[in-house]
Image 1 (cartoon, one colour):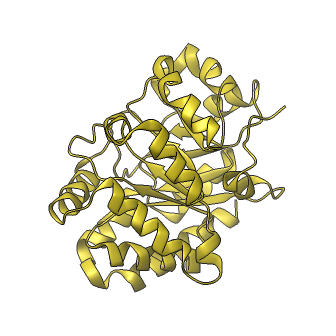
Image 2 (tube, rainbow, N blue to C red):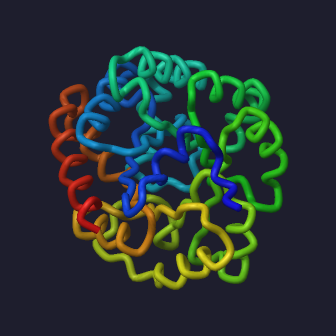
Image 3 (tube, rainbow, N blue to C red):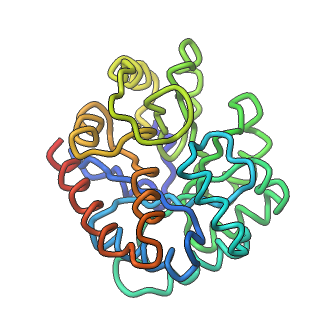
Length: 269
């Protein structure tokens, strides 16, 4: 029996042979209005699920590209309440944008500081179907899992190349989808990904039917297509954040073209 929750996240992976393209951006970089606009462009370009990063002063899993985006957003005054306001604005949009599945990428500190119950209640109200917390160890996830489950929010498990014998233990407990980390280290564009991801995914699939999507380091259509061939989807973050850093408030067209090309590649997997 799958632990895939019957919320928005289940829609992302439920179509047979459909491979998901998952995008990421940092809330408030460069402005809250731009974040709403850029989410619209990603939806228009075919993104299946959008991760919204909640800016934090110590994002330990992030490389310099997303660290800099966090700094820009925080300097602009972005808060957790501000991120929820961005989601409210997205949900007020017409058509596909109002219905797009959303997830938060955040850290334990902002959630605990906000209050677990209050945080996940807000997620449920705004139909944020999943939350990814890179610095929450598997052994400590029960500190959040109760509140997440009570509000039908999937607390997404991350499985890294270092997980080894823990891969199946983590996978058995997973909900929503499993975030397979492609490479050691922090987020960021990589020219080559050499991890034996096929073996990791095969090990996961022996114990669960919760979908797996691969992220960290993916930036080209070829990489995205390959990752989707061996899993249920590809996740791209730093490459999009770099486009935003380069183009600022005028990044919309470039985001659209990039996401469109990556979605087309994933669809060919």
